[in-house]
Amino acid sequence: MEQVKVTIALILAVLAQWSLRNVAEPFAYVDFPLIIIVFAALQRNSMRAIIYGTLAGLAVDALSSGLLGANGFTKTLVAFMVAELARRVYLDNLFLRMFVIAGACLIDDLAYYGLHQLLGVPPSAPLATTVAYSFIGTLIAGTIIFFLLDYASSDRLRPRRRETLSPRRQSRRRNPIKLNR
Amino acid sequence: MVERSQTEVWRLTPWLVIFLLLGNFILMVFNARVEGGERVIKVWALTAADFVQSPVTTISSGVSNYFISFAELRSAQDENTQLKERVQELEVEIKGRSDLETENERLRLLLDLKEKSKYRVLSARIIGRDPSAWFNSAVINRGSLDGVALNMPVVTDGGLVGRVTAVGPLTAQVDLITHDKSGLGAAIGEIGSSNALGVISGTGKSDLIEMRYVSGSIEVLPGQVVFTTGQDGIYPDGLKVGEIIEVISGSATVPHRIFVRPAAGLGSMQEVGVLLYEPEQKPDFESSLSPGERTNRRQGTTP
Image (tube, rainbow over all chains, first blue to last red; front, side, top):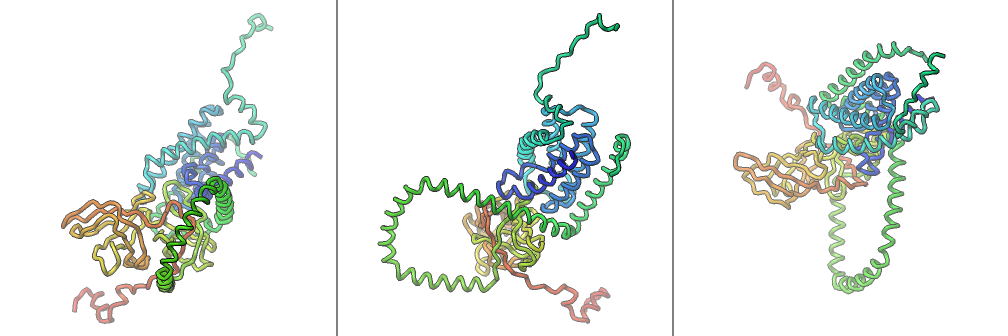
């Protein structure tokens, strides 16, 4: 069931990426598919996240003037890196996840720009401005979307949400007298 | 569905990543080397996207028009009073100018007729923009079923917008003249009256293009208008490209660097026109030679 929800979210993200820039120009700086790919990668299913990364990237490339496969490449790479990170580090806290979204966005943008430069098709937009705006846009949208996806996710994951802003846990001291029982 | 153990997934993942990265890289290299190599994928994606982009554009423009009209209603009363006064002034003026207006209208219609007979124009609506922030192409709601073909010029009432770079049955993708890869032959002033010829290319900025290779010995001033020459084999001659806003003067041996603001409002356009224009096919060099010349050319001898 969780897989179906993430798949639907990814399809909606691709459709939003295709259409929302024509509604308002600032939406160009929000990478909706990347947010969903990071979310999928954080769920510790690396293979699914990587395949989602390639498919969503190719879907975006198909309507872009950029190189076909550039987004597919960068999003696959980001999905793998986030999945490997999530395997080694506990990342269920929202603040940590925001750092992950920010890092993923930077890697995605820089790799995309680098690949185009490497293959002799430099992008039209200036690097610093585009990376900065994408960073801000994707981070804000990513935080909101993560909240929504967490809310819509299965009961199994819900207890984790309480840790989002929870106070520091107090460890209970055991009574040494009872230890020998 | 096959359930894999976690260890098996961890073992397989790097191989899957390498395979997919390699696949994407090959696609990129193929796309960078072969012009139009991605065409089949693009056509399918354009067709699929149309079912989403058209309704979203219709709904968003409907909502935005509603709010604009609501906002405009607030200032309508003041404007109404001002307009009534203005109408009275204008009526007096119009009476004195009616003869001139009639003559002007007649001449304008003649001019319109002449221009319209030159190329057929297919009106289209912009239903999508490039999904990536790095590029700035547009998707229009006309495709091959409407007669749109590759490389057809796209214009607005202001001037040149760009050319069609991918065509689906229902939609088409348009690369703007601000695109880095775009290039077109242009002249400062009307063709025939100007010898300031050059090439227009994108600068990466959405409201600025650059004209290169204009001889530094020719006087060029800001405010002059740039038109297409038709020598690039894509755009017809005489289309307005834009207005010069800055000139970095060259010398007898160094060409000018000329910055031009596109005449078509590329950032805010909603409606465009596709010129159903296909340039004359130029014969390739080999076929234009006589049989004797062709034989000499193959043997590497000159007559």
